[in-house]
Image 1 (tube, protein in one colour):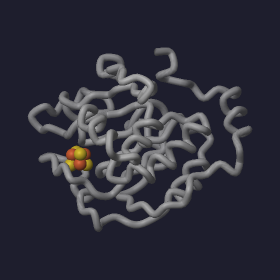
Image 2 (image 1 turned 90 degrees about the vertical axis):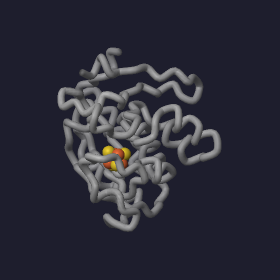
Image 3 (image 1 turned 45 degrees about the vertical axis):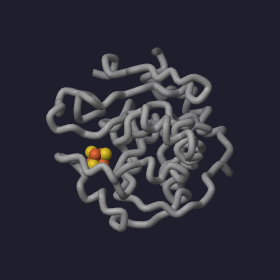
Image 4 (image 1 turned 180 degrees about the horizontal axis):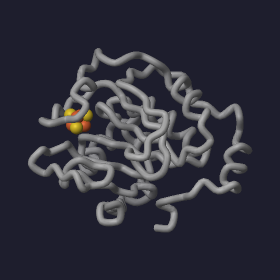
Length: 197
Ligand code: SF4
């Protein structure tokens, strides 16, 4: 588990600057609720956070109810997200949150693919459970792509009765943080709940 917190060493910074400058995602429209350029509360280390617009789960007590309306938010493109993301060489990773990121799976997978190639890790939230996402991935190429580029998955709806303010990176005890880096080669999803307390 030594790779969970990767410090930004001078060596790593040099490696990032050597990355292909032409690397960028295919341009696709995407509707967002918002962007946070630097966050330390949406996953390990310093992260760029993309909040997508639209969520079918409507969890009571959701902290982002304005993100539910599929027509709300604003339109941008995967390329514009990328251009903003790469401005910051200090990032440890990118987090996809919402809203429901898997409604925009194909688009986020493109950003995530480039992020991984650049040496960043990808954390993705979903109101669907890991088991539900695996089922969806059987028939949905976008879901498969987003799961493939995701290292850390936080899955399951927010449940008010299970709310626990002491939890790190998740709001309720039914939600889990999983390292799914080996998927789809392996269905193994290492639970990080007790490590990231
Ligand atoms: S899945 Fe997340 S954004 Fe959607 S309703 Fe539940 S808590 Fe809110």
